[in-house]
Image 1: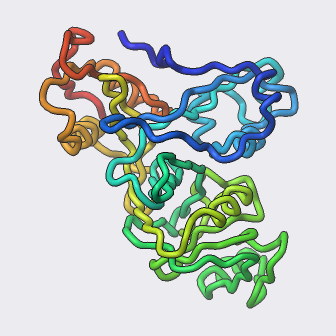
Image 2: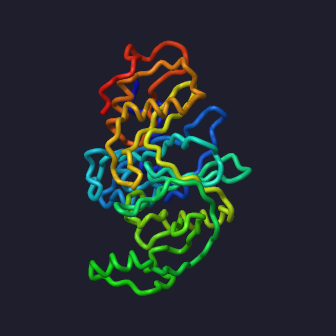
Image 3: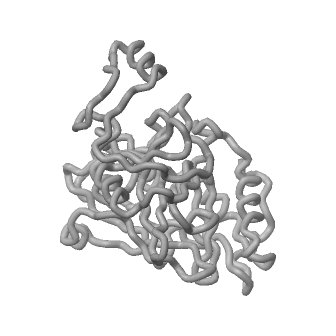
Length: 323
């Protein structure tokens, strides 16, 4: 049976992480051609005052991905001495490694700066129920520091119904929900922007726009030019190759409106495999592990197959009960 936590995972002590200080962006060198995985899983020891919201801000992780990686741990009071998994290993999204790529299902943005052999990745807040973020291809059309916010009529009506009326224009500043910077997109009504609330990054909390931690949106402001392509996808099952092994990263599926979705997980994984035509036909699959990964939906890459060579287990035929 393959391990749920690959041997290459990097476990860092609390002392080491504290010495390094608060993390900046998650920046990784791109893997060689034909490989798809960046980063390493980390483990820290919680202090008494730690919460998942604070740790997410420090290590560029979203709230839901912290919860998924640490089942059974209280996100508001993990407790001093509790081992906390930081899911900082990623299968890169499928498709071209260029511009901005947003994967709704993992609440995460990737940026591939042109002419550089690196990728930056950031946790993201996306549209909540009734305000789903779109799957689309567009581009950055503008960069605006210290934005004001003009609430649309639909949002003003929603707030008025909750006895929380909004002004016609919210000025720039600490109370502005767009934070210190916004990118306009070729999709009318949708933005990439900061936030006046750190809680909600890595969750479905926005009215369709894409929210970042303020330090992250300011970093992107300095490196993303106008005209950068933006590709928005909804891929809960990402497959990647590393060292001749095939890995699966699973997230809770979202429907086309951005709401939790019940899908045929068996079919979804098979379809993801079929899309990866570069993997060939000589994969030795461990479907027991696939079933475990899909059930866990913890967002961490796990080895599920070997490209050629000996089979990894006797379970090499696809299961029919992965609902």
